[in-house]
Image (cartoon, rainbow, N blue to C red):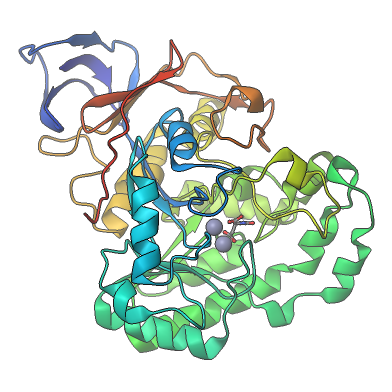
Length: 432
Ligand SMILES: NC(=O)N[C@@H](CC(=O)O)C(=O)O
Ligand SMILES: [Zn+2]
Ligand SMILES: [Zn+2]
């Protein structure tokens, strides 16, 4: 297949030839082999790598399955996902890893599977499997109630360092949560709830302190550390000023939404870590644009509308996001300070480099043909009902997004945007 005259993120116009699963050549005036796709005036990006999703299988297929989650990924230009361990059973033993791997075989996109830590985890059998990373390791309870104490965290970080496996951390210090602030939640449900109480309860200082502590501990253990869903500029700065063995990710929702949006979102905006003040959101986004943040990842955490239509204390935490990440960021390049090159780096090149995915994240000869084509002149309003996650809603309703015309995973067209159709489900485990 030949993709002809595509505009790359840096503005160069090139042909990209695909042979089987790989990119065979990138150049000008390349000879065609097989199908030729005219990509003139279209943007070709490396498929995005979302290192933080919750696809809910095994255990909660009513929220999401590997099939629906990976369709949502493909329809948003994401070609590799990394699933987190707070499923049922939690992915804390070799046997649980094997069970999840069977579910993941229904994925349309390539994937990694993380291993988790609980008091009854089995590091021996878990590290025996090709886990993508240890994590997210929960330093406070979130969906799945997998929060652990400092001693177990320290032990886990040492074991991961020994095994040469990176550690992804959900860094909030539960001892610093403001229980009194949570009491202001009230009895309103769904959009009628006082959702700001969640932000007051899981205060920014709880994240900042936990990140500081985790970074120290990681350095002592000689571990590779990745801080998940960093939601404060202070925490980003701690990571950016630490040695290169520590990286961080930021979610689209912490960049684009703040406590000011909670009146509209209600319990649909409850997530961990919570939305922050508008001032913190702005400072966080500045760091994304300016290069202090390594990776954008979604923390795609689908829950049904019915589950979210509860009181603030009863609604589960988390928002979907895998399908809207690249579309939102590309729309942001149209009139904001974000550049297309930065979007490429945040969503593809840097996650690949950070987690040693040698054949992914770049459009070069020899790399996997994981690609997505976009028309920057055609943003459209994001609508929850048109997205492909099982949950059927989005916190970004009505915002502009640039969605892909098609998405390829290792040379196979898994998503066709014009027809809104999907094909094949032979995603591979990237740690195989
Ligand atoms: N972010 C969330 O609020 N929820 C996540 C878990 C997590 O990442 O903490 C979920 O699995 O629902
Ligand atoms: Zn988390
Ligand atoms: Zn998560």
